[in-house]
Image (cartoon, rainbow, N blue to C red; front, side, top):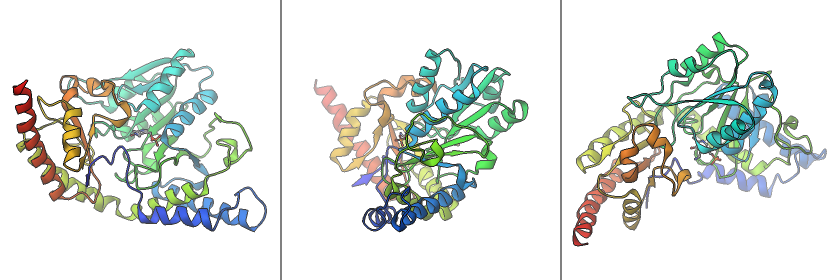
Length: 378
Ligand code: PMP
């Protein structure tokens, strides 16, 4: 099997799986219980907060564990607007956000907020200047993703947010860091973000765990109400196995961010060459995150190609797994609407090899021959 759909989800690493099993079997107390088993569970949560915050250069007190980045993004958008959006009614975001931001923003729009969606320009770029210029004194919140999940496009979030914070210190900033976390060398302080969303299952932890990392002093109103866990920001008995498992995968990855980035960068360079030779057109920009390659194989529908590749044991995605069945508004926004139907997403890890990529390109060549032949026969 050659798995090249890591932006959709990853296989759980041994460290994370072992940690989950350990917490489930050995440290199964309720972290709110006052007895020893509860205290042991609470210790694992504290350890996990330290680990996740350290990986970002943030404060452990700012880490709120959630069920994943969808929840983190919703909590950030609704929780920040509730506290900071009473008088200021403008929200700035981009036109290429993940649905967990885009749909939440739509909801806020229906509640009376004015939404400004910054779109890519004619070169497919969203500049820091464009994001900054959309913000005014009436803006309560800016939400921008770090790396686009469909194309790998890296947005200039640090540059945009630092300018925004200088000019409008009261304007809240949120970043969906899901496709950048543990892949690009991001520091919380440099981001100038008040809240940052991350997800476990994109980085070899199980599905159903993520975090919202909140800057000290920033107030996030809860969207759930209950027993007051996690300072009441996200009540509910903490999933210690998932939390500890997430922390263990972060711990395993954080010393090698730069090393892995370089390695994947080399594979990407190799892939771009062989894929072009196989007749694919690379949609992703050269300065995109190397972990994601968006490519179009002209004349073959992406779903047809996806299943052909699957029959050869190679797993990729068509556009984005999250927009399954729907024409991608994000590819359209990037000016790739014309090739959206024939676009596949190849998303790699540090374990992806040149041999994997060669097999992919051979299979694409084979698909071009046999599928075009089928089409001719019709
Ligand atoms: N944001 C981005 C950029 C994503 O790629 C994803 C996952 N597809 C999410 C948010 C949602 O994350 P989760 O699956 O953890 O809810």
